Image (cartoon, rainbow, N blue to C red; front, side, top):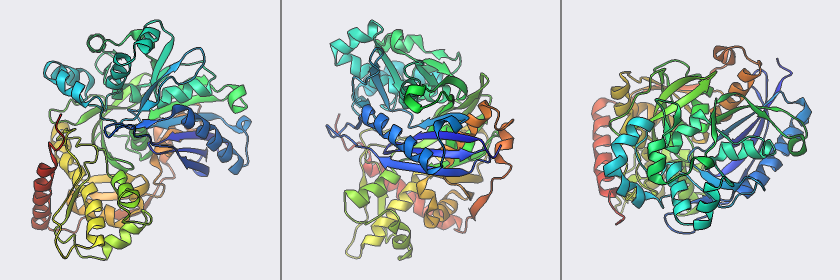
Length: 497
């Protein structure tokens, strides 16, 4: 088992990573690079899919070289990806015909708002998701409505639609497979979680032709093989899984009631709810945690779309940081935020508010405000954004959440995780490996080819790096959170639609 080698391609919102793992789940090598963020208008976020593909091949080459292996040494390839980002490509040439529309993009917000009165309740009950711009199906609708030639080609079956996992499987297989994993399909907003089929009535309302849609496959299972012309060997592509689902699995949250937070570009809180989907009445999202051998495990998710990205904005936009690593030292240099709150609604508010017209807000500034106060407020804002929906999650799932696992790049920040434990009144575990997304994809790929026999086998050697326990009294917690609520109300409804 220790000699097995698994390649993972981890496509995030801001960069591409390729990693090699062994049969113990130990990372042997990794290669990473950022890709270009395109903002052709204030409400738009796009990626160049061809750039992502070129970088993916480069990163794979570097990761294999760093691990001192070639593609012939691999037993499996696993893919994990940013979920709502979607694109169209030409089936004949395999080339993207549009830039990818990123899940943060808001161009479909007016369309979603117009459709919500008639369709909002229906699609939420059938798909588990609140009708919102994050829907990949909304992006596809926009593309076809705004380009007559794309519509003609889509209806003729000349174009393929998919999320980033679909794109990578297609490219790695040399065009042999047009698929989407179940955990990614649910985020398109047009997948019926009760029937396990595309939601035809909604597709008709959006005027989306069936011919453009991919086949839905298991998250763990051999989908196809890589093309020897592309990768240098025919290797089973044995997992394709949405990033948050991969992290939930990678954190070992295998049983109902176990939950994790992932601190990346956005912050996601996911709860394993078992074999029964929980449909939220308060804006939380029902996810397919994973589908193995045709059997679905469901989850409940709340997310704040801009958290780590807010720290990135402090660094690159506002120029208040030289690096994200400075945030912990700066936050600890002051006893509190001096009354400052930072609502990181740079692209709107998600659950439970779902207000795409909200915008980022920095409030409470006074003559005594200094840079560390603002930086600390940004970190605290990440945690408040989680608290906004964790109580709803516990109520709707019927399960108290008193233990959380934390992963993602920002989970290395001790201040952030201690404040999370304090505000959520929950014990927070940070695993020894905080790259749970890529690890989860490796586990799921390895399971499909027999590296591990059961999901539990993956975690025989897993352990914690640190554990954070709550130390804040309830009165302080309530007072801080009440003022956060006041700040959020002031951030709402800023953009006129």
